[in-house]
Amino acid sequence: MTEIAQGIHLIDTELGGKKGLTSAYLVEGAQPALIDPGAETSADLLIADLHRRGLRADDLAWIVLTHIHLDHCGGTGALAAAFPRAQVIVHERGARHLAEPERLVAASHDVYAHTAPIYGGLSATPADRITVAPDGFRVDLGSGGVLEMIATPGHARHHMSVLHDRTGALIIGDAAGTGLPDSNLYVNLPPADVDIEGGRDSLRRLRERAPELITLSHFGPTADPEITLAIADEGFAQAGEAARTGYARGGRAGIAEELERVLPFAATISHAPAVELWQWLGWDTNNVLGLEIWAQRQAENGQTTQ
Image (cartoon, rainbow, N blue to C red; front, side, top):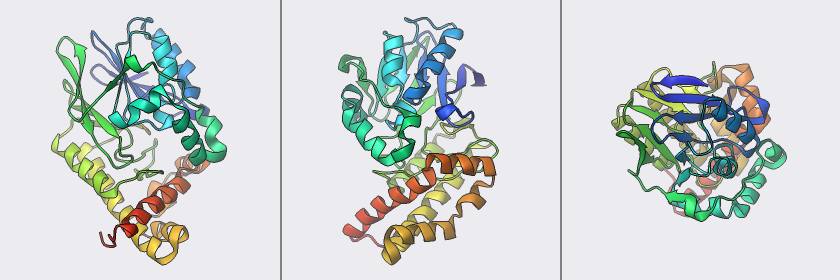
């Protein structure tokens, strides 16, 4: 557990036993919050870490989700059971899937394919312990401390980012992409509801907050918030143009070819171990699949230019 800003601690949830891949965030307060518990397969590690930190069963007040992809939310049910006072905060599109997770798990495993065991599933959270968070929702940490939930669609329609009022730190999930240790940022746009324009608008909204710190779920604080958001915006724009152009020329294969031309995967990430982790999880392939679904929708709506 590493303190990245006053009262905010990064916990490596070690997806698939790999360090430096997924992170959760414990935010201190009279009513402490845990942001993004990670995959179900990481739950025991995370619970043990929180107990070592001194949190007893009744101490955790909030479990806050940036979105309901299993590498971020899969541990929610287990964490809710371990900390029975904690209320789960989630976008309205995610609430029903936490209470009845079967469809979400099945759809996620279809995407993850042979890597599904790395993530595990998601046990149900009682509906009365789920709070729907609209844009601007404020999570009370006690003693005047607040987390503000900011709607940031793009990676997914139900994606939210979290602003810590006292430090100006933004915990942005996958809103800007993935930046593994020692590697460069690269867009993360998996199936099934990528939104390129929405993602770029979300980045503009985050930029307007002039954050003191930005930290990613994959993985950790970035060197400069303004540069992070600018690189992410360029990546969204390039990926969107590649998807439109490639899809018109050759469907999925055309997207893969055009994306590699304008935003070369390994060369952009520029760190072989990070490239290997992306490929091990199939996230590079999932980018193409997500962009294909988006490009198909654009074509059906007659939107052929950026």
